[in-house]
Image 1: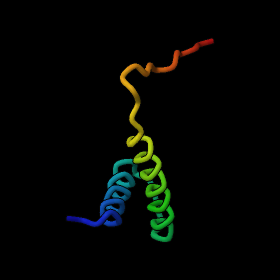
Image 2: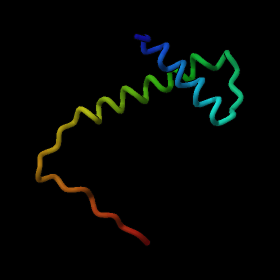
Image 3: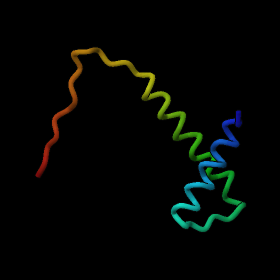
Image 4: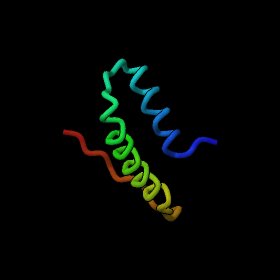
Amino acid sequence: MPTEIEALDAYIEAARAILNLPLELAWQAAVRANLEVTLAHARNVQSLRLPDEAEPASVFEV
């Protein structure tokens, strides 16, 4: 099973290839660090449990 770093590097490479983006090897660690922070925030949001009576906010359009 790949480590989280290996999984993120594989994700970065796959996204780079499918989007045809140039990515210098020197930026790989910075991109991975950004994804690690994003995933940490997502885990925090995902762990938040709302009561069943919670309703989504209204959508206001102009």
